[in-house]
Every structure is written in C-alpha cells, then in structure tokens.
Amino acid sequence: MTALRRPGLFTTGIAQIGACGIFLLHILRALPRSLRYLRETVRQVFFVGAMSLTIIMICGLFVGMVLGLQLYHTLSIFGGTAALGTVVALSLYRELGPVVTALLFAGRAGTSITAEIGLMRATDQLDAMEMMAVDPMAYVVAPRFLAGVIAMPLLACIFNALGIFGAHLVGVNWLGLDSGTFWSNMTSSVDVWTDVMNGVWKSAVFGAVCTLIATFQGYTTPPTSEGVAYATTRTVVFSSIATLAIDFVMTAFLM
Amino acid sequence: MNATPAPKPDAAAVHEPLIRIRGLRTVLNGKTIFDGVDLDIPRGRVTAVMGPSGTGKTTLIRHITGQLRPDAGEIVVDGQSVWKLGRDALFDLREKIGYLFQNSALLTDFSVFENVAFPLRQHLKLPEEILRNIVLTKLQAVGLRGAANLMPNELSGGMMRRVALARAIVRDPMLIIYDEPFVGLDPIALNQIVKLIRTLNETLGVTAILVAHEFSAVRRVADHIHLLAGGKIVAHGTPDELARGETPWTRQFFSGEADGPVPFHYPAPDYARQLGLSA
Figure 1 (tube, each protein chain N blue to C red):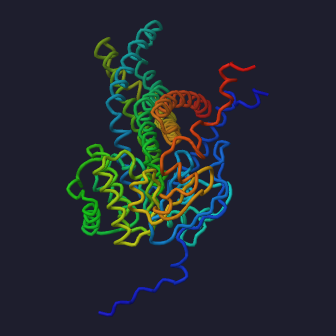
Figure 2: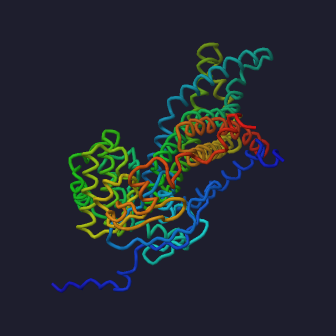
C-alpha cells in the first residue's frame, strides 16, 4: 500500500515532464503578448547570449585545439592528416558545437535564469506583477525563452568558428599541416544545408529545451533559499540529460 | 468651457459593500482554513482583518484578489464574482486594486522611480513628462521623492514599504490591500505607515483592507475589525468594541494571553504516551 501512496522516482519524473509540457503551452500562449516587451527580449538576448560569449569562445578554442591534436595523431596512423580540417569541421558542426554549447549554456545562462526567477518567486515579485495585472509568463518567462532560442544557435556558430580556429592553430601552425589542404578539404566536404544547418536546428531546439527547463525550475521552485539552490542544480542536471537525449533522437532523424 | 458632469454613481451601488464574501470554505493540505466565512468590506472605510498566525488572513486576501481558488463560497468584488471572471476581466479588476505586500516585493532590477512607474508603463501610454510628474507626486506623498534614483537594495525596510505603498497607489485604485504593513518596522517607520494609510483613506476615500497583528497600530487606522480564528469570523466591531474583550476570543487576542480558545500547543498525540511514560 505504501508503494501505491508514495510516488516513486519514475512517477515523479513523469509528472515533472507533464508539468513542464503544460508550462511550455503556457509560454507559447504568452508569446504573442510578450511581443509587447520586445525591449525585455533584447535585454535577455544580451544577458543569456552576449554575457555567455567569453566562456563559449574560450571553450570553443580549447575544444578545437584538443580535437586538432587528437585527430592529427589518429589520422597520421592512416596517413590521412589531410582530412583534419574536414573531420574537425564535421564533428563541430554536426555534434560537438551544438551539444557542448548547450551544456555550457545550461551551466552559465540556465542557472542564472533559474536563480533569478526563483528569487523573484521567493520575494513575491512574480505575485506583485500578477497583482499589477502584468502577466509574469509574458513579461518574465517568454522573453527569456525567446532569448534562449535566438542566442543558442548564434553561440553555437561562434563556438564552431573558434573550434575550427583552434584546430587550425594546432594542425597547421604547430604540427605543420598545409593550410591550403586544411581549408580546401573542409570547404569541399562540408555542406551548408546538411551539415551546418543541422547544427543550427539542433542548437535552436537545445536553446528552447534548456531555457524551458531553466524557467520551469525557477518558476515552480519552493520560495526558500534551499528550494532555489535545488532548482538551480536540477536545471543543470535536467538540461544536460535532455540535451544529450534529444541530440541522439535528432541525429537519428537528421542523418 | 462646458465640462461634462461626471455621471452620478448609482445610490444602491454606493451602499453595497465593495467586497461581499459568502460561505467561504477552504481546505489546504488537509487543514480547514475557512469553514463558512461570511464577510462584507464596506466602501470608503478601512477594514482590518486580524487573527492569530496561520489562521488564513493572507489566504483570505489571495481569495479576494483571485490568486487562490476557494473550495466553496462566493467572493464578489465591486459587483463581479471573482472566480467567474476570465483572465482578462480578472486583470481588469486587479488594475483597480493596489496591493502592499508584506515584504514590499519591489522589482529589484528597477530603481525606486521605475518601480513606482511600472504599473503606469505597463497599462497606460502616458507621455514621459506626465508619467514623471505622477510618479514624483506619489513619491512625495510617501516622503521619498529624494530617493527616486536609489535602487531597492539601498533602502531600509521602512523605506521599501513606503515605495511599495507609492506603487500601490500610483493608479489611484478603488481598493488598497495592506498585507502585514507594520511587520518589522521601527516605531518611526511604523508611525509613518499608519499616518499614510489614514491620510489616504481620509483624502481619497479609498477602501482599504488591512491585515495585521499589531492592535495598537490597527486601532489608530481601522474603522472596523474582523477577528478571524478557527476558520470563522469569531468577532467583529469597531476597535473600541473589540478592545473591551467581551468574548473569550477577543479577550485572549487583544490581551495577548498565551493560552485560551487559540491553544498554545499545536495538535499533538498524548504527551506522556509519546514519551513512553504510560502503558
């Protein structure tokens, strides 16, 4: 009987996913009204996008350098170092760029969104907006959601660019690969529509998922300091799992 | 200049209470908060709702403002049944209500000026100069015109409460709800808030609901007090009537007795049995 009364981890998880789905419907319903707050959306693009640039650029550079180093040594076994640019670019555009950007975004911007909305909940700011006849879904949540969808593909593109630059630094400037070979193989093998755009679509979906989770966790957090702390942690954990799971599904469909 | 005279309010409507609550019943987490509460809030008066902690005073306010749905009963505000209103109609009603939160609930990213201007910016397309004048007028009323450019984290608790009050009155509401406005204030700040509430009521004739514990402050501003306990209104009357303490509830509450109709102990199993001292 106890097992029937107490919801287990699985039941709680399903309930959370369901609640998150309903929350998404509320956001979508509030989106037309949120267009009134275009300035707020632009401000949020700056906060979640531009303010994340440093970490995205630094990580992109190092991921590209590591990729260049590892792949150069692996390809050299088969005498295929000329393909370094191609392999690095395809890895970044198709998988690493969108996924690593989403993971970094969840850690940097997602936690910030959750903590901000959670504290607004804890200090009655969301209730105050409701009492001033301002819908917090339209004023607070929807602009952040939109900002995530807009900023993530841009961040992923910048991540990819810095990653390729990092691989070029290692492969060409350090290990002596011919620069013309690096670039020409890359440009002849990478297709804008199938490779680059796949990554862009993935990034947009990851942006939507990560900001959905972040706003949902912040909006529904218990109004205590412990509640906000747990919600912030859950944002990173759930966003990371969701990103990797959705990446697998999208890759299977987009291949 | 031929000004069109303002339409005279319907005499019957003026005498109708602004808020009429009938048969309110609420159960939260298995605990009965309200068990058939009937309550009228008259227009143009300051009505206080008092009661021990946890009796549902703030819950009552949340029912009135449409934030929390009761299990049963009807709440009519200005002729509109709150829980039959759609979202847009509810927001229209809320535009006529000013709400002073217990912890002020100022928007922390905005300056004092922008906090007070927020409701105006959201709902009215006013020229910046007119908006500025309205905001400064309200800040002057609460004595904080000089603090217009400060951020909320630069204010004391009393100042935050006064900014929140300026924000609550910035659209000249028909009803102001004060949720625990005196909590945590030093005597000077408390007196300032008491004076402001009284002045607002006397000069603007605005209806006010005051939820508070501090009887000494409440009796200076309230025209009428409802004492809420055990899920019901157990006493009501003017502050002087209730101060006489003619019922066990009023006697305990207004003289601050530790035990009485409101028990000192939270419901618990038998003490001796829980300590293992009885068979």
